[in-house]
Amino acid sequence: MAPVADALDRAARQLGATRPQVCVAWVLPACALSGAEPPEHVNDNLAGTRLKLPPGVPEMLDAASAELRGVGTSR
Image (tube, rainbow, N blue to C red; front, side):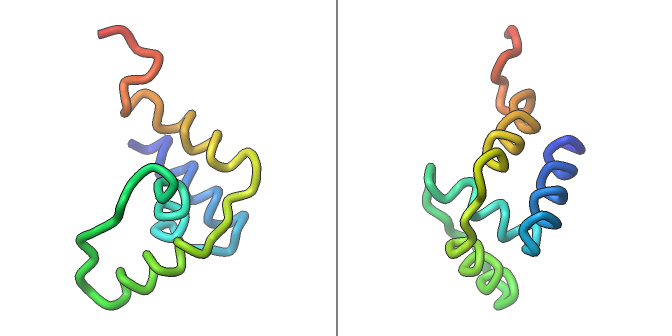
């Protein structure tokens, strides 16, 4: 999980965003979001919907999470 967290932190620093905002912007094209309860989580999720990830950032995050998703591993 550390490679994913590191990649999220790098992207957040690059974009001047929070880790949750980058998470939302990264997964938004592929899913629906639910479950935010505290107002600060809702605010971060909403901000993430407006965050545009520049070229290279989604690929960096995908590569960092590939092992967790079972991509490129034999089962």
